[in-house]
Amino acid sequence: MFNSKAPSLNELPSSQQLLRSTVIALVAAIVLLVTVVMPSEYAIDPTGVGRMLGLTQMGEIKQQLTEEAVAETVAPVVQATEVVQPGVQPAPEVAVTEVAKPAAPVAPAEPEVVGLKHEMSIDLAPGQGAEIKLEMLKGAKVNYFWTANGGQVNYDTHGDPYNAPREFYHGYGKGRFTPEDRGILEAAFDGKHGWFWRNRTNKPVTVTLRTEGEYIAIKRVI
Image 1 (spheres, one colour):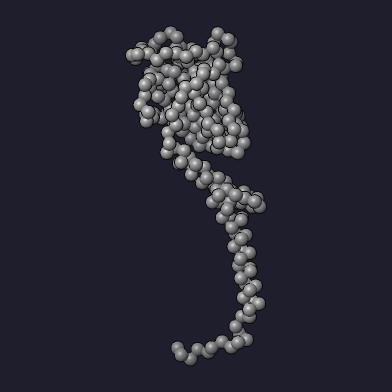
Image 2: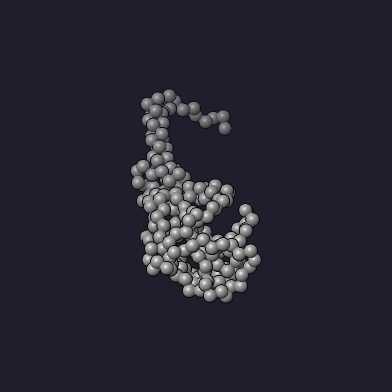
């Protein structure tokens, strides 16, 4: 093992060859950074190659998950605002007024909570959120359908009983990058039940909500 021949000076790479190899390796690293690493990790795609390879979409999902994880660590304190009156119903039907919270649970078969129907639309800028709640009694059911009108939004369907503790949460379902959803919302208790949407895309989105069923009032609270 001591008889291996030492390379001669002619066999060793020259300084020019080493410099060229270093430059080639540096260029290759920059190309990989711009076309692979930046799109897949940070959704930054200056060349457009990352989106063609599907890497930019991967980066957008990673950034979205990070933002959602941060946002969900702080539960927003929802303050009720004025009643939103749908524009597609006759005046007597869309004039939704503030309903006082009952001091005690009310039986869910009152005539005034049956047969309401509304349609509401909300424009969401990139990053903006909005929430609509229905005031419902336990066991009441509402047929609903909402659509992002060709866009996609994150949503959280949940409810709050009257005088709910600050940290209370009761969810009916949630999703990310969803174009639309429909179904039957059945109130688990007396209180307010509805949907929170957030536009996590880079384009404005219009959410349209249609409701029909047993509820007392409808309000936009955010």
